[in-house]
Length: 213
Image (cartoon, rainbow, N blue to C red; front, side, top):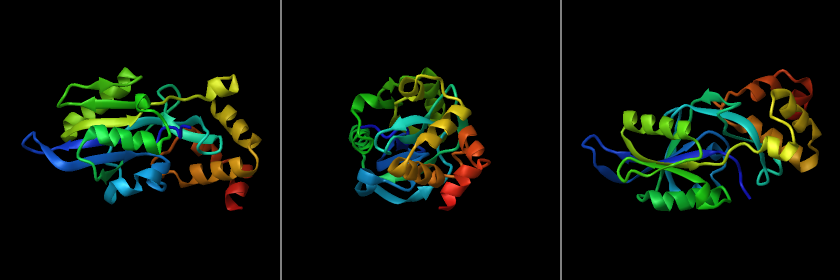
C-alpha cells in the first residue's frame, strides 16, 4: 500500500563542502508531521518548521494506507506552493534513508526520488521537482535528497480529472472509518499545507460539522 506524498529526506553538506556524519534530514508536509510511524525510531530532535523547499501540494491521492481518504501529495497540475518542514534522521547514509522512507510509505524504493550533489544521482518522475530540490539543496548546502515520488491517482481511481468540486464530492461519498480518517488526516496536516481544497473545505458547513464531531 502507498500513503501518498508526505516527505523528503536530505543529507547535509557543511560549510566546508564536506558531509557531516549523521546529518540526514527528513522533510515533511503531510501526516509525517504527526505520524512518523516506522520512521519514529529513525529520527532525532524536534521538527524545524518551514525550512524545506516550497513544493506544489494538493490532496489528490486516494490512499489505501489512509483508508482511501485523500492524501496530500506533490501535484504540479493542481497543487499550490507550500512550505515544508525538517526533522533530523538518525541515518548517515542516504541509501538507508531511502529504505526507511519506502518502508514508512509502504512502497518500493523505485517510488522514492533521489538527488545527490556528491554522486550526481538525479531521479524523479518530475524534472521540475528535481530542479526545485536541486536549487534548494545548493542554496541551503544540503548535499543529498530523497522523497516520496508518487503522483496523484485521483483521475485514475475516479475516472474524472481532479477539481476542488470533485474532491469535495469524493469526500462527501466517504463513510465510516474512511470519513473519520479523512477528517483526521486533512485537519491535522500542517497549517502551511494550505491548498485550494483545504481552503474550500473551511467554507463547507457539512465538513465543519463533521470536524466538530
